[in-house]
Image (cartoon, rainbow, N blue to C red):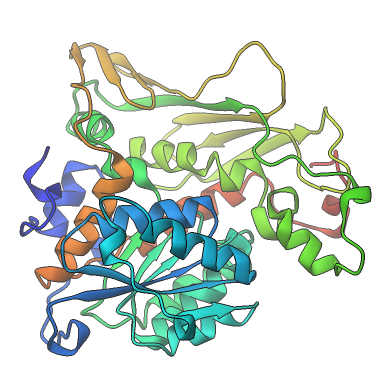
Length: 403
C-alpha cells in the first residue's frame, strides 16, 4: 500500500498525492491549516450519516474502520425505519460496533433531517442520499463548517452542481472535502494512471469506457404503491428510476467511468460531445433510459466514448477502460490494470478496498491537520457526465427519448 494511503499515518501532501494520480487543479492541493479544531479538543471525531441505504451504511462502516478515534453518533434519513436499521446494523458489526453510539435524539427523520444533522455536534458528515439531494446537502454542510464526504455524483443537473461548486469556494480552509469517486484511491488505478500521466504510453489519443450491466433497482408496478403514499415519497422510495433523483445510469453509476476518462485526459474537460440513447425494456413509471452512448472530443483531437447500459438478461457485461495512446495501449478493470507497447506492465493485486482507502485518507488528513478538497474535480467530472444527457427538458421526462 502506498504510504500516503495507510490509515492513521501522516499523509504526504495533497499535491504529491494528486500528482501520482494525474489529477490537476490548484484548488485540489493541500491547504495550509492555521485554525483547526477537532471535536473541540477531544481525541475523537464524530461522524453523522445522511442517507442510510446500502451505500450510506457501507460508507459509514468504511469510515469507522479508518481509526480508533472515529465514532458514529448521528444518523439521518427520510424514513425512521431506515435510519434505525442502519444504526443498529452498524452497532452489531463485530469490528466496528463498539464505535457506534447513536441516541434517539440523534436519529433525525424526514426531508429536512439534514438540517438537524448540520446543527448537531458532528465533525464529519457523510452525504450518501440519492444524488438529486447532493447539492443542497453540500451547501448546508459547507455553511455549517463540517468536514464532508460526498458520494458521487455531485448532482443530477448542471445548475445545481454549479451552485454547489460555488458554495464550496466558501468552505473553511481547515476542512476536508472527499468525494465518492473511489477509483482515484484504488491501488491498480493509481499505479496505471500515474504511469500514463508520466508518458509510459505516450500521449493518450482515445479512451473507450464501458459500464454494461443489468438494472440496479427496477421500478415496481404502480399497483405495489401503498395507499395514501404521495408522489414525492413514491419517487424517493424508487429514486433510481427518476431523473431528478438519480440522473440516470450514466450519471449515477457510469460517472465512475467518466471520472476515469477525465483522469486519463489529465482532468482537462472535453470541448464537445454527442449523446445517444433510449429504452429497450419497459420500466413502469420510471423515466430513465436503459442505454446511453456518449462521444467526447478534446481540443487536441483526442476522443473518448462512454458506453453505458442497464438491461437485464443479456449475455455480455463489461466494466473496462480501454486506452489507446501514441505508443501503446492499456486496459483497466475493477481490480487489475495493464499496459503494452512502449511500456509493458501489469498491476499487482490490490491490498485493500478502494472504499476503505478513500476514508483512510480522509480521516488521516483530518487527524494530521492536512486539509484537502476533491470538490473541483468531483464537480468537473459530474459536469462532463451531464454533457451527455443535458438538458433535462420536459420532453426528457418521457421514457425512451434522448436528443
